[in-house]
Length: 211
Length: 211
DNA sequence: GATTTCTCTTGACGACTGTCAAGGTTTTGT
DNA sequence: ACAAAACCTTGACAGTCGTCAAGAGAAATC
Picture (tube, rainbow over the protein chains, first blue to last red):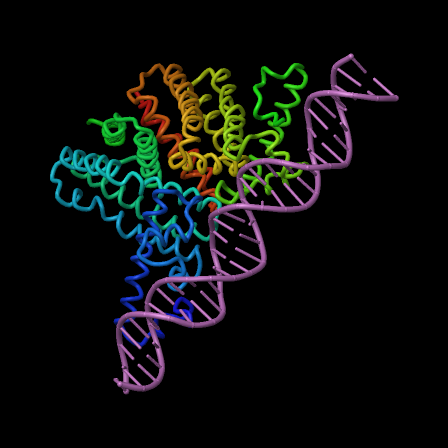
């Protein structure tokens, strides 16, 4: 019997469910690493398995097919990246503090997780072609939009201003900025991180204009 | 002798060079159509040949390998899309006219060339992984940035204002906006085009604030 | 400790990939 | 008209791909 075919409710032991889910996450982690190194187009199941401690056959034991695996990866990825800025929002007490913290986390993430970010943009592009990824990608995009909105609206609140830009547009602007910075960073432009921080400053100054 | 291996200068007849280049462009056109439908990851040489009137072997006669073909496609694509907005810039005599024209061309392009645009974002993502595409993609990105800058700076000139945003940031902002609108459009959101036009209005109003 | 259940490896399958050589067909040059 | 060059097709090659069945090994259950 193939475990992927049966529903979780059929599993008698809670412990089994946990172990099953944990291994799925473990394999998803290996898959994410492979994907972020090679990109979607060049990542095979055998390559993923080689980045784990298992053989290639085990992937079909824990995932029904490749799409199922990638989808799980996307969801797994989401869980990690969405809460990345919450600390800054809740601890900052002045607009300057929030702006600096936001920029710092952005720049750090650009540097430390560049491969993961390029994978995100790759998968988002894939979702423009592959219908099956679209819903999950859209959900991540939405939560990223929410995150940006929490930051910017909190910034406006601290500065005592109002915002005239709609949340989707706001997210699009920062996403475009980050995406460009990522491309520059990955092509070896050492000034990319500073340019990102400066861009964030410029944009925030526009969105929340001086009184 | 394989024609791709010899230099163009070796070809005696000017006419031969033309025919050779024309067929390359013709095949690149078929490749672009296939790529825009399937995406980079799912496009094979045989699939491209089936979208042309030739057999799959001819591709290796006109291109040294797959990377050579895709690279030629990217360059071919660039030649078409970069001059798209020049007419609007040169004919508009008021800022309102320019803004309306810019928005109209953007929206039309979103609707009529959606598949081509998603291919562009796909290839740009590929260039984050595949070194061989990076230079050509960066060149296109640069010319798109120049195009945006021509429009916005002309807009500021007509409105008698100055711009405080650097060209790369300006491009990133509009690119992010367009990319998001494309995703919404391709997922069946009928309001995507209107949202794009509205977003352009909002951004231009910020970038060139009322006096 | 025996037996059932879960977990993982191995090896194979058919299909598909990029590449290329051999040879037929068409066009060109003389 | 004939020879040469250019063009295109066909078919095959060595790999790789996702998938899956058979069975070995480990763990849990009784």
